[in-house]
Image 1: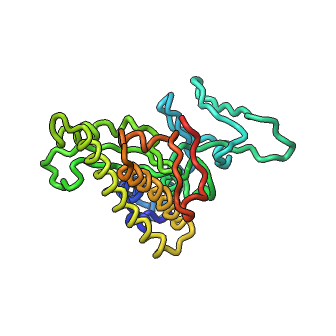
Image 2 (image 1 turned 60 degrees about the vertical axis):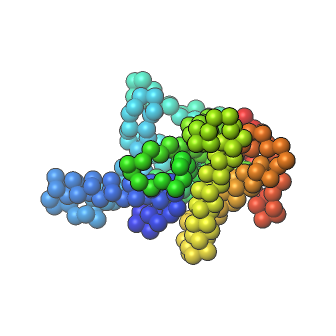
Length: 274
């Protein structure tokens, strides 16, 4: 996978691509330095094999190459689960009855399609838990000076425009309330919503540009999904802002909220409520 073509992607996806590209260049340089006969092309191929074939146990903090297991394909609805045991053996257990000759599939990781492409070289079409994006919000939104105090929050936006873990946005909400002043809770809520709305709308425009310009099928899949869910996220905030009794802005981002969207964004399935 040529990471250079993905570095211009919006938001966290582009940030991840640029980071991986720097790391790959560094490791390839180290490999060539340690093994002089090794060409950069050969080192890059070897690194790609390791990156895409290794399994990682978060519980053990261990990364391993496991022959045969590394040929198992990913499926959002897998037929088996796996575990790297304490004795460093790989255990695979079927989650349902399997027919003779049926493929045994596993679940690689709970990540957005953009990260799936960067890590494994493919995307999942259609409705799945991979139809999401990671996005960083900042307060104050206009601050670009590294010397300024900027409150940041990285959250996952789901296909229905909701936020997976809204608690991560609390520091931004507190900062907005402080900026609004004592006794101005309503103004703080509105400022918080405007910050999210401004930054989400900006990234939405960037993804729309990718949809219009890209000819890569995987890139279009990622960009279309990101565009659609950001539309839903923005619509949630706009509906909250226009409500006669808006209440708390955070409630508008809950997965339990049912919203009515335009026809062009209503076809995707919503995530289950928490």
